Length: 152
Image 1: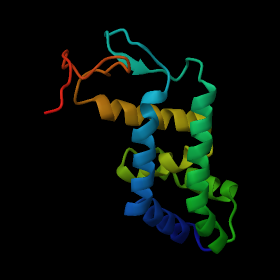
Image 2: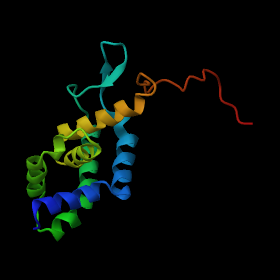
Image 3: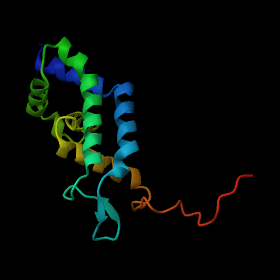
């Protein structure tokens, strides 16, 4: 196992790589709208951490965890580390809590270890995805066309 600084530097390089970022972003954007929604006080619909989560949502967590574990397996093996060792190192460093792109990517990594962190990640991605619209579009609504679609 290398020094903590070297391991964190290498880990950040991994989570900042285009391949890793693409896999996480693609997964999250593809599935974030499948999580529990409830009306907010401001009239918009928000994802809710406290509402009951479905079996399908837990299955998505298992898929996400397996994806991240597959990515991390080689990294951990090269350094003779366990996931617990890595998690302790990340938390001790404090990078996890930083309000930065690095902190965000480390939180996405940690989300594979804990369901509540995964749910928070999915909520965050959903909020970002719908921020431009000012509200979340209900899954049952159409795109606002209101008419029949015809092929020309």
